[in-house]
Image (cartoon, rainbow, N blue to C red):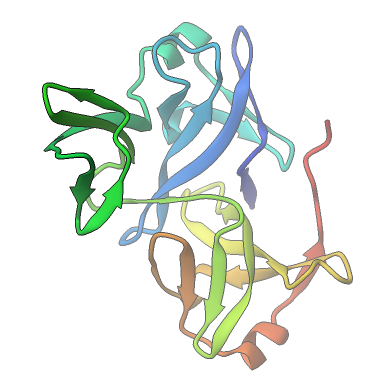
Amino acid sequence: MTDIPINAKVECADGPLGKSTNVIINPVTKKVTHIVVEDKGLPDNATRIVPFSRVATATPARISLNCSKADVAGMPAFIEAHVIQESVSGQAYSSGNAYVSQYVYNNTAYDVLPEENVPAGELAICTGMHVAASDGKVGKLDQLVLDPESGDITHLLMRKGHLWGKKEIAVPASAVDYVDTDTVHLKVDKGAIKAMPSVPVRRPSS
């Protein structure tokens, strides 16, 4: 099995390039389709969506890509800025909530809002997302584990509670019900989670 780490160092064929911040998955096929790389040295935007086919190797500490830094720079941005416009009279409103606009010109307010650029029908997940059993939250997501032959997601590595015992729980992908903006929801209860195998916590080395 292969770990796909989040918040791990990324190495291109011609040198280091920032870190991974998200993994994008297809929830139907249970496959990883992209990883998100962040590096402040990238032109125009610090994030890029990198196809999973560009991942050469991965360990808990590092993801190695089979492309150059220039190749990554030419890939789509993950975080895109969207400008919204509102007419104002002292204060601007959006969806019923008052906010202070960044720019006001001729009584028109403009705000720049960041938005994730995720392919249609896919989901972006990140380390630290809550994991909830059918009867309540049980921990936080750490990494994904893939079958090296098929590329299918086989397990989610989840940190239990406050990391006491320094263990992670390997949750089978078949136990995942659905994923929303900040939580992975499981089909099983806390008792079933407790019975799942644990593995030593593996943190990326500096």
